[in-house]
Length: 497
Image (cartoon, rainbow, N blue to C red; front, side, top):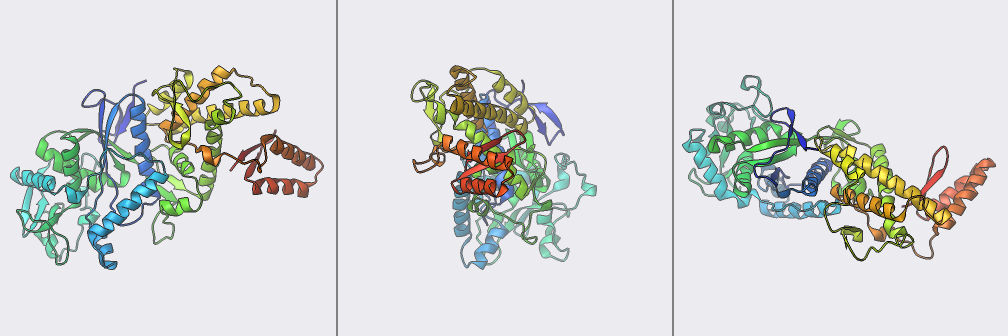
């Protein structure tokens, strides 16, 4: 079961082989900190969080770096509007970033370099490009000479004759800055200071770096000349990642990354998310509406990571229902472990996030579920296929829990159920899906499982008698007490909200 990945650079799926055996150097182009993170950021951060978790699960030592772009025109514009400073705006939204990611269960990266903290590395890289003939100064600015790099366009597949300069570099031909360029395709490595803007001293005069050079410098400073995985959203392929390759490889003569991975974009009700359309949703707005963070993770993971996904109310409802199913399975041991004679306080178990016992070793006992999970995910991080295994385990544990409640025993042995639960908790943890015990406990004032089943039986009798008003009353009564009923052709299932 070899891990294979679709490489944007080669446009094919390839076996995963790292520069250094057993170790992965991974860089994710992070956020520009001028506003709260939105659904697109949520998808990207969840995807690369799970990629990192899975690589660790299969035995790799992963060094994961995620940058913050903390100097940018958007940041400066916001600071101007708020009569604040670039640093204050950046610090505020970096803090908000960590708050949002913590709610989504995103593990922190090993390091979060900031562009403003990497000025020495940025200027050093520009100097080397200049010395090698790939960059030229122009009245305080420095530009990259795109036509000097013969492989320009190899990531995006674009040819120079068919391309236009990237939007961030596209200016009016009458603009003096545009006229500084030797070629319209050239892009800025260093920008001369403008009145009132933050600036750093350099050999070319006071100024600040261009966007693309920042990531090239941060990758090199933190991870070296060649890394294993460079990740980001598909919208970064051109021009940002294309320009990173041109900058870094022109200096080192080595590949910047062995694998370029890109997640698909998020649409809202079939349309591109934008503030002008009124469909722009931040992570905190979504979660503050009561959407479970684990449902958001599940929504993201039910789609192949490279394809676009459509955020709709129906999709979130489906993800929420799916999460309830997996959560029931995750809480099986907590609810029924003592009845089955399990000892969760000793041996190979430790308390994980949410106080759910998880194995203290990486792998549960080898079993077909783990093998099928890995077989799916090893195929270009096919997380939807991996989720199929989780749902199968969760539904089986739920069925056995219902049998135990009604009949006082299970059809499957306690030892086998223990292994199934151990497997579910472990694999769910790989996907960052974790249940909080506290949200599932209920006081003596709440309905017991037996009382809920009795209410469901009363409702069933009312439906058979075509007394639908009574049937609806019982459903509403249970819903008011946090019990949701799910009717199917043959039975009615329930879960605590």
